[in-house]
Structure formats: C-alpha cells, structure tokens
Image 1 (spheres, rainbow, N blue to C red):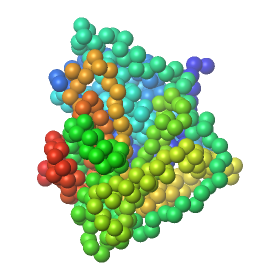
Image 2 (cartoon, one colour):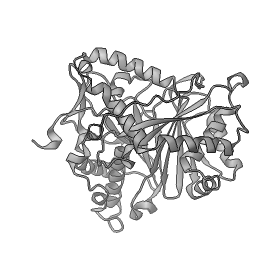
Image 3 (cartoon, rainbow, N blue to C red):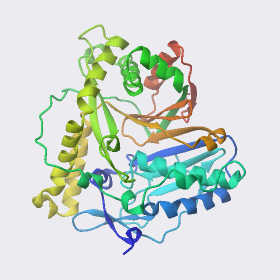
Image 4 (tube, helix red, strand yellow):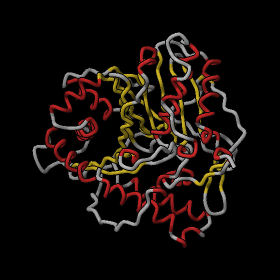
Length: 418
C-alpha cells in the first residue's frame, strides 16, 4: 500500500491537542509570508495543489477510535481564499470531517494556519516555503526556477511521516529536577479573539547586541522579556519566579526528516530579589539554565517521559473519553507551571532567488495567556506576540526596552490600542 494512503497514529506530542482544544485554545499556529506585491488567488491555488503532492499527509483528517485519535487519508480538496477569520482561529471540530490546515491571503500576505496535531513548526515552515517558491516560480518564471521548490524538500514521503518519538525512544531513568513553586502568572481582561502584535527588527543589530552580552539570540530575547514582565509585577509578587517554556526542535539533536511533531519543551526561570537583577544578571542565569537543559541526555529523558505513558499497557486499554479527561487535567497542571511560552523557529532558509520578492515572514500561536514566536527571514527578525488578554503592556515594554538599546522596531498589530 502506498504510504500516502495509510492511516497514521498521532505522534506522541500530537495526542494532547485533540483532548484539550477548544474555541478559546485552538491548538493552531499561523505562519505567514509577506510579499512585496499583491497575492494572486488563482496562482496561489495552483501552487497549493502542487505543494500538496509533496506534502500528502496535510490532506489527512483526524478521526477518533476507541482508544486513540488517528489520522486518516481524505479526498477533501482545500481552496485558498481571502482571509476571513481572526489569527489562529479554530480548525479542529470533534466528529466532523475537515482538513486540519487552511491557506488564505490578505493583500500581499500568504497565511498558512495548521492544527498542531498535524505538524510542528519545522514541518509547517517547510510547507510554506514550498508553497511560496511554487507561487513565485509561476508569477516570475524568468527569475525563479520552476524546480526551485523541489530542491528545498528532498525528503521522501515515508521519512516525512515518520514518528520520530518512537524511533528515538529509550528508557531513561527519570531525574527529579527542582521545579519552581508559586510561579508568576499573567492576568488580564480576556478577549474573544487573540490580540496579536508583531515587531520587525534588524536581525544583524539584535545579534550584535546579544553577542555583546555573550548570549544567544534566544537567551537575549528571553531576558528582555523577563524584564518586560517584571515592570508589570506588583511588588509583593516579585518572589514568584517567572518561568518561560521553550519548545525545542529535537531534529537539532536527533537525526530526523519527519514533517510531523518532533519537539520537546524545556523550562527556564528567573526569580527577582537575589542579585542586581539587571539584564546582564538575567542573561547569565538563563544561559546556565539553557546549557543544562539543552543536552542530548536531558532531551532523551524528555522523549522517554513523553513515551512512558503511551507504552504503558494499562493506559493502552483505557477508552479515549477517559484518556481525554486525564489529558485535560495534565495540560492544566502543566500550564500552572509556566508564565509564558517563547518559541524560536529560527532562520526560515528561503532560497536566495526569491528573497527579492519577500518582505518578511511571521509566526503566531494560539495561547491561553501570552506567547512570543520568533523567526528570521533575510535580515528581518520578527517577534510575534499572541495574547488572550486585551492588555498589551508587556509587549510595549519589550519593544521599548529594545528601542532604548538602539534597536527601533516596526510595529504591526490587530489591537485597537496600538
């Protein structure tokens, strides 16, 4: 049987999303490419059809069995359309046959929204890159080669649908780490739709600034974010640690070509009141935490922990409805241990041929609190905040701190207050 016609078990990381998704926590992320020219709908549709030949598992739909959800091939055909919903709107509806991704456009922008059970950021970015290359090769055939898109996706379909959690699972003795207690939680006025704010920054300048502090880009921006949150903390809450969850692309540590989920979450924290509490001190503390967390041994332990429940014989025979109940509890418990999520997608790696036609790329994610997504296209660094709150003080603080350090951002937002 052809690989593209087989049903697929949800990978380990994907299992949590069907159990916990709702209208207000959609489990969706949006990857966008802003072009330097208006998008042509008919050409985008042609490019989408070509892209799906390379990414057939995006045509799978989510079904529920007695014990687990699974992905099943469908004959549904997606149609690109003008944007008509808010950012990261709901894509998964229980007991309905529907695709788990959506392609839309607005003026110069191409949007790809995807339900997280289908793929992680690496897989979605590769899909969008292929789509954009295909689109531009049709619009600009004299300067963009028709086969350019195929050069950036040399992965076979069988490799692209691999469950890499299962491949790299090995039983690792669980180490009991010291978890922060009484974590600081963000509060605010809940909104019906996500508030999104994006800052575009010159990447070379931000990198140079991070280097001056002997920090990586991720560590530097996390430290600035901690300072931004601290400016809004009430004095009596300063003893509560600020905890940042950071999704890690496991492909950087374990060889994998999968386009499905293959990431693990690490957590780093900082508690005020134990030193000078300036940017240098926060960076030093975070750098030490990242060094401890980002080792193959520790990440192997994360994979082992994820897989332990799935491999438990007793868990396998528990009905799906009961599993959903306990997964919801587990998700709520996990959420209480974090203040904010910061996801660095990294460099987009767009081919040089198409960079003259691309202004920048963006990423946003659904959230029950506040999340920052970072990606770099050419020399444009995008920091996209999505929030469930009306208040935007932390985001303002973040960009003002960078502006005071000589890096003036270009701000875009859907918030009436900005």
